Image: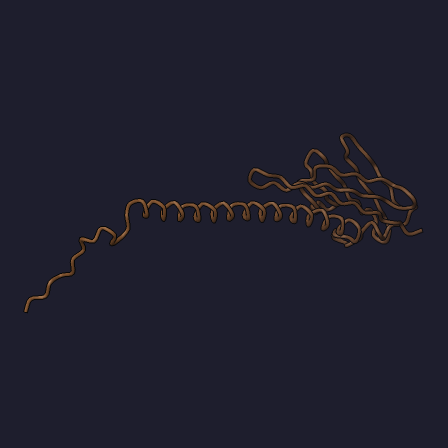
Length: 167
């Protein structure tokens, strides 16, 4: 006995071109929204990473200046007020000398290179936009602003500290 194939001549069977177009439009909207969200979150993450990196640079530099980071690990906090001196130069350059328990230690900021380093050439912070050091109230105030570049954007972090000298 012969079996007949089912008839598919019903005009309502299957999808029409209009239904395919609507489904494609909805799928396109979902994909475009997902990609847009992804790129927004990626830019936010990259921006936050640049800010965190700049803040870490400045924080680490201030820690090394205050507590020591040179070959003898002497920091500004070890200096006596009578043994510390500050020399300022052109365009914001400065050198902070402190003698404390380890003689001839100094930290300097060179605005032409944007680097804060010590007497041994150890770099405490690079990409420094501005920095200042000033004596006041038996101590020294140090401020650093560093930049972190990445892609089309730039992040900036500014921190300052006050170190009271030993009397």
